[in-house]
Image (cartoon, rainbow, N blue to C red; front, side, top):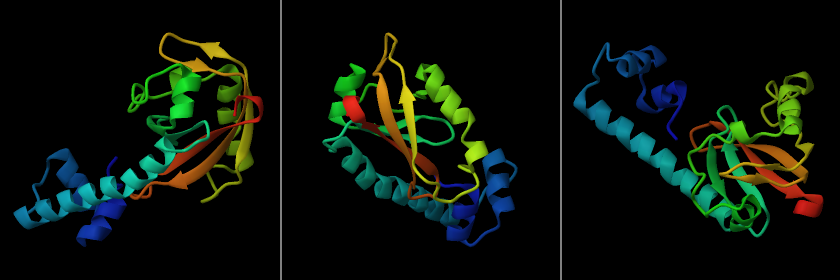
Length: 166
């Protein structure tokens, strides 16, 4: 997890265009700015470590994904058991390929419900069928989708099992 260009530009007191040039290799920042940028990036990761610990130690069946990529950022021991997975085996992996038809349909309807326009959209309840893959098992039942933000401003989705599979 890193910072968005705009957030890093603000932290370093430079333009977003400068950040873009650095990323593309068109320009190399001064040594001091390089050190400052690395400190900002390390700080963002540290801040999210507390959130990851909260998710991982939760007694509920819960996981956290990057809202855009669906990359798994953290999950509880109870979720690992529900998924029939190890405690860390799915971290860094996009979970989208395991989405059931119901999850895909719910995701496709988010825009119609203003999910992407609202900074903090209302939580959404989704019902899904069971799906079994070699890497993961999705249990039938309900889940609650809630948006939260990572330290760098990246939107993430906290997914909590509700009902029978909670």
